[in-house]
Structure formats: structure tokens, C-alpha cells
Image (cartoon, rainbow, N blue to C red; front, side):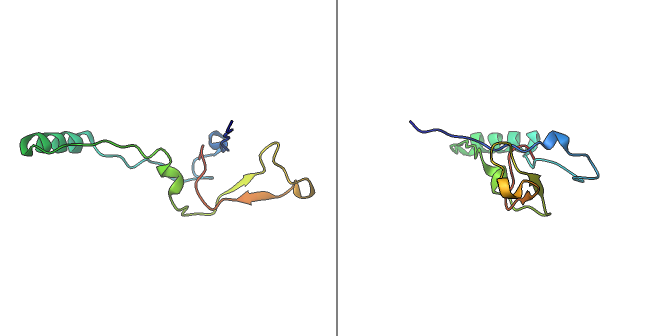
Length: 92
């Protein structure tokens, strides 16, 4: 049996203007989607849909982000240290 786990950051603890300046998710506008569907119907094109579930985790961080050691994963000899993230993390 395969077990899975996911580390989630406490993004709710961040403060606007201190921990981050802007947050947004780049998505298509509804007008753009409707135009694409209409064009596909007119031209007889097949449309396909996909979802990349971990797309946001593959983005490059533009700033330095640090997080505390998660409970249960602390390095006992370095419990006062933090982790510097190389990639995005769930919850941020």
C-alpha cells in the first residue's frame, strides 16, 4: 500500500504588505472562453479540456520565501532554523 503526504504552508498567517504585495491566479476571462467555444463551433473544431493540478507548484518564486520547520519534521540539532523554499508550496 502506498502512502502519500502533502506539506501545506500556513498562508493564512501572512499579512498583506508585509509578507506579500499581490496575489492573483491568471485565468482566462469568461468572454475569451465563450469566443473560443463559438469559434470552435463555427469551424467544426474539437475542444479538449485539461487541468494541471500542480501547475502553481511549478512556478518560479520571484522572491525569497522562508518557512518554519513543520511539526514532526524538525531537525533536532537545528530546531531554531527555517527552510528557504526553492519552489512554491501548497497554502502560499
